[in-house]
Amino acid sequence: MEGESSRGPQPRFDKLDENYRTWATYCKAYLKNRAVWSAVVEPRPLVTPVPVGDAATAAATATAKEQTRAAAAWDRKNEVALSDIMMAVKPHLLNIVEDCVTAKKACDNLRILFE
Image 1 (tube, rainbow, N blue to C red):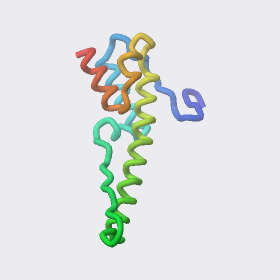
Image 2: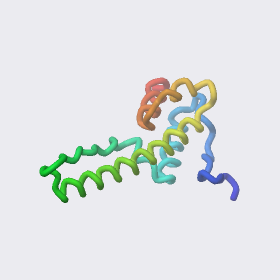
Image 3: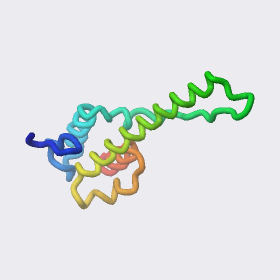
Image 4: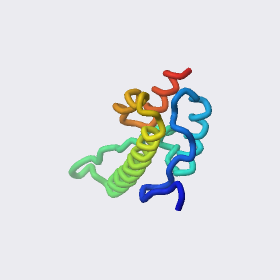
């Protein structure tokens, strides 16, 4: 299918160069369509350590497992969103996002640069 690869649809908008506001709108829509925008606007879920020994209850263990699953899902969304953002900027702007570990940080860095 045109505009798609094995990793998902490719952006159908120009890579960021100087048109930040337009690019940011398209990028947000693209990340929402890919169901990963939440990694930009929501913090990573916390994982509460499970008490060891007698203090470990079934409820605490179940809660920790659910928190771990939620954090893992967020991590995957963040990886996808961050890589999509990196691939949507022109090469001369990669230094602004290449060391970012979250999609939010990449978006913040670009916003600060252009606004």
